Length: 248
Image (cartoon, rainbow, N blue to C red; front, side, top):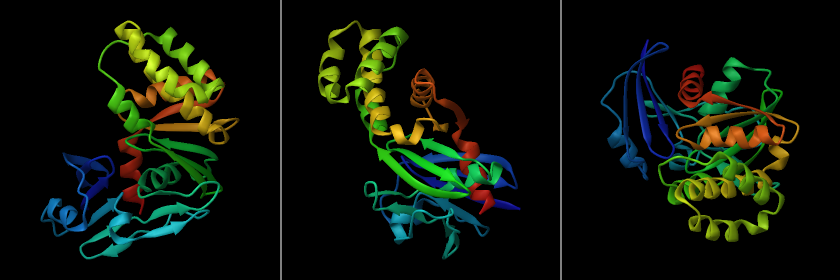
C-alpha cells in the first residue's frame, strides 16, 4: 500500500511510502496554521498520516494513557497529542515516536527522549505514557552553538559542574565564550546539558533511556547520561516516526 507519512515538529517532514519502504523525502518550514499545513500536503488520494499537528485540531489526551489512536480529519488521520497537569503542566503534539517504540518494543519500561526545538522526556511503562517533561534545551543549543570541533574534556567538566550546581547555568553560559573556540563550544554544550539532566533526573536516574533526534545533540545527551551511569543509547528518529505512523 502506498501512503504519505507526515511529521510537523521543528519543521515539516514528508515521506512517500510504499508499505515499509521510503520512496521519497521532502521537507519545508513548519506550517503554523491548519490551512498552511493542508496547503503544504501533496495532492494525494491515498492515506496520509500526520504526527505533531494535534494543536491545530485541539486533539489532546491526558496522561497516563496508552498512545491514543489517530483521528480522521478529512483525507488524513492525525495522531492526538498528550497533556499533563502534574508534576508540571506540559504537552506534546508529537506522539509517533512513542507509538513507534511501543510497536517494536511493547514491553519497554523506561524513558524515550526526543530532541529538537523542544526536548521531550516521556516515561513509558506497561504500554502507557505515565508522565513527561519538556525543555527548550534544543532551541537554546541551536541559538548558542556554532559548527566546529568540540573539546570533550571541557564538555565533561562543564557538564559535571552545572549538573551539580544548576543555579550556575547563566554564569557558565556567560563565561564559556571567553575560552578558545573549541572549548567555548564544549562549555556551552556542557552547561546546557548539565542543567537539562538536573531538571530531568527522575526521568533518567536508574532507568533505561533511549534518545532520538538529529544533529549533535542526541549523541552529546547519550554521552552525558552514560557519564552519570545511566543506561542510555541512541535510536534513529526516522525509524521511530515511520514505525509509529505505520502502526497506527
